[in-house]
Amino acid sequence: MNIKSFIQDFIAVSNAFDTENYLEKWHKNAILDDPSVGQVFKGHSGIQKYFESYFIGYKTKTKVVKMDIINENNVHLEVDFTGNFPGGQIGGTLDFTFKNGKISKAKADLI
Image (cartoon, rainbow, N blue to C red; front, side, top):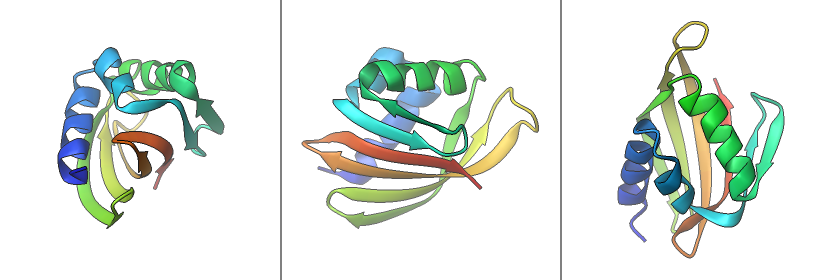
């Protein structure tokens, strides 16, 4: 799996607010933990709720500032979020664990 290409495509799909292709990047039983919103989102239904609420709802666009590929199954990203939320811009981190070419676990947070 080419993590850099996966992340570039993932960000493009996210920024296009393409829910169907966004969910295709995640395992059906993936877990997304976002302490900044105080919730853990489980499976496609939970992750869809997260994406629609915090990305589509706020028109949030993501830009990768720094990518650290830890190993063949893990990557750490520093990102910049912009959108229709208070302040309009904020930094964040995304940590992904991959399994069989899809995201199996993620942690998202604001900095």
